[in-house]
Length: 471
Image (tube, rainbow, N blue to C red):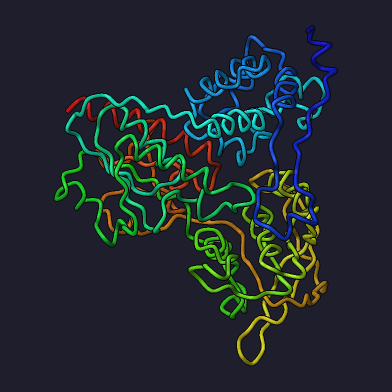
């Protein structure tokens, strides 16, 4: 086909559950492409010689190459191309913001002047990864002969999974230390089942175990053992810190200590990791809510709001102090939340949370805003409108205004340099201020994306392998 003919092919929509059905279940919202849809969508790729889409991919997947295979129906070959660069294609195909990364650079989208009409790289990636997993094909990952070197990986999120696999391939012994009772990090405790089925994450963990990676759960580095203990007493030759950004931030307004106020982290951890929605088998009690307010405008806020609906809330109000244009959440997540009935209140913010005589949430006092000049982020700053206060009756408030770095590692590791936000400082190779200790992912970047964390992990793993080869 000529480029003109390819541009004329309509973008393939993703089949989805009906909004009024899915808001009452935990099954995945997006149902995935059929083989024909995947082939049709892949055939829209112009096969640009310069491959601009690759510049938007943090792990540099050979995007034109895998799309060419998919367009011709060779999906297993397409998966093989993806797997050369990405350990988690089924995950990234679902949760990565392709519209801000690979698809933002797609020539098709630029020529059509609409990023939503760019080639749906993520959806095709997901299809190929799902087809491979469902085929049952088991391909043991090649591991080089044992070197006698040992590496400790702290945390088990995307960055850590990447490091563990890349380091283990070189023949080094790897042990992952996870604070929770299940591995997977944010993929398990943060992202809801309806966006990322946990069986997919478990499959990747199983793959690490089959390579010989050891897993230690319920192990809090900094409490159970300190990093220096792992090196000086337990005999590890290198350490990778991938503990993420799991320390919730709050608004510091009156009433945040009332019963019924949650950080989004706690709320989602209870629902996802501890399955609060499964009342007969849950490992944690479910806080019964009727009117829920979620504060924030990012993906975590969308996840919390949509989860609240699925946990039985009658009304869910999302409060955001800027306009919808400034929301950092993916457009797809905003669209899905609206479809499911989340009520958006933009240019508003909480001033204080009100409670009854039993210290339980009864309402929230909010203030209206207007947009002023852009701030350091490039977004227009919200300016409060004096005298615009109003009361919103709610019984639950979920605070989703960002996360910081847990200070436990830095507080218990003498000489480990961190910045003013508590993020670990690393060089261009992912090495910290202490030789032999590396870090990557959200503990370095702040709250970022799965694929960016993987890119950090890949860089650090290469550095660890070089370091171990020297000694």
